[in-house]
Length: 178
Image (cartoon, rainbow, N blue to C red; front, side):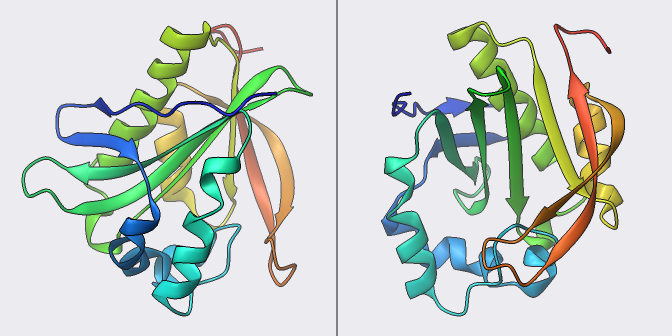
C-alpha cells in the first residue's frame, strides 16, 4: 500500500489538481448541496468546517488519487473525483461529484476519462469498476461513456449508515467486457 503523489493533469476544458483544505469554501458549494449529495456515500455537509475536516483526511488515503476539477474558462472549482486501486480485487474504481449547475455539460465524463487515462499511463491499469445509485441514471451514463459495461446490481451504504442504495455495477476488464 502507498500514498500516491497527486499530479496536476488537464483535459480540454478542465484542470484536475490536488484538492486541499484551502478549497473548503468552494467545495462546500456542491458538497453542501442536497441535490448533489443525494446519492453520494457521504451525507450533505452542513458547513464549510465539515468540508474542511473531510479535506484534511485526503492526503492520508492509500492507493487513491483525489482531484478537484477546475474549469479552465473561469478558474472556478466545479467538482471533485477520485480513482482508487482496490488491492483485494486488483482493479481500479472511480467516483465523482460536480456542482448542480454544471450537470449535463460533459464535465464529469471528461474528468473521469482523464482519471482513467492517468492510471493507465502511470500504472498500466486495465481493469475498472464503478457503481452508482440505481435511481441516479445520469451517473450511469457517465460510466458508460467511460467504456464500462453494466454487470449487475449491488448495494452501498453511506459512511454515516443513514442511507442505503440499490446500485448498478459496471466493469471494464482489460479493455474488454467479461
